[in-house]
Length: 516
Image 1 (cartoon, one colour):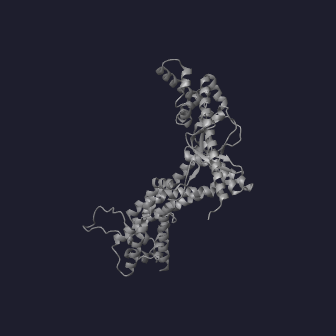
Image 2 (cartoon, rainbow, N blue to C red):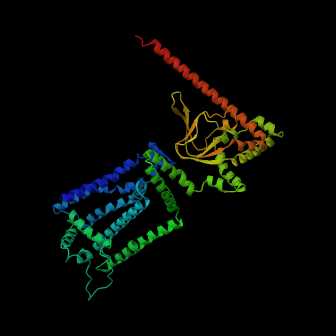
Image 3 (cartoon, rainbow, N blue to C red):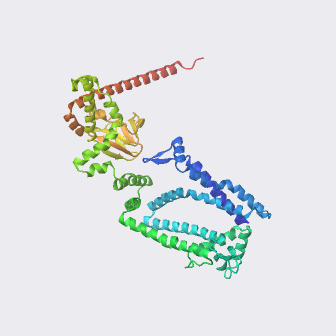
């Protein structure tokens, strides 16, 4: 029939979507530290480790689809396969339930987007209704299943005769409707013969959904097997579901659940922000930027406990000790450490001690450890959202920065007014050391965050206190910085000379013109 063809096309489209989803996920970027990763190899590696296995299992019913069509044609010519085989083929589609975690994640994203455009309360009520419908659908299927395959609670016989095996004709579906709904009996008969149509399937489903939703105000039953399922429905659907609702309300009121607390705090804030932006007719692009700030910067500050919380909340005597422990690891694994303190010069060793070589080595090691401890106490954590400038070319500044987490781009202003990315830096990289030492306080490049970044800042006035405690440290750092600065300057001059020679060669080639 036409309805069966439509149903077959619908099932094919659903199965194709499950297969196509694997292809799309292999080419869909993912969020990391506030940025979208679009590298194909990284995407494939990330998806293979996170979700590919479950998506592959959920796509297996697509392989069974041609077999289902073959069974349908064979049944139309009275050559149906065994009933058990047909049932198993139908239940293969249950593998698509492996897609539930992905579906829940997608539902959360949809809920958040709808809440941004409407209201959090309305969205939460709609989500609750969706969950209720889904849960009722599951119990509808379970209810029909227990009527087709009833649980055998029969433990004895009557008058020596075996008890009758229950069938669908002995179920609630038949007895509750055979006098009032004449369409039920032929539908059941068609199902038992394996020739049920799409229309008949819908009639049976609608009656079972009526029972599962308790629209008749009572879970009526016909046998012990059905009573057992009705008890589960009463406990899980009504009592359990209502208890879940109350538990969430209490949890949000008491701020017991961290995720719920995060949702409540963010939604209460963003609803007010969304209302304000709608009244002021903000452009959609600006709205998105504001929401990103509140989600990725403001919300973690309200919820998460980070280095910044420690630095702001702890008293001085504890802050110095705790921050030193945190920043010491960052400092030791940074390029700043390897460039400045990995191998102190022999001149510095000779100036700091007049002892023997082994004693000088031990003394230098102790001196370096002391310097690291003093510097680590002065580092201040800073958080930067993606696409935020840490500094701009031409600004005056004396701070040193060490990247703990995230990625930044180094930009140079061009003569035509545009900017050019000349390098990228990640965890452990540093910049601003020349300005810290006062050798050149004018920033020579702009630093822009590519992802969300945690960057430790060292101010010149704080470093000055360290230099006052150990003047030899400044002498040593200036010597290293000047050497690196001169090396960088000479490299730039060489690059400029090479560019000039290249331009001269190109101009000579143009003047010579084509030969022949």
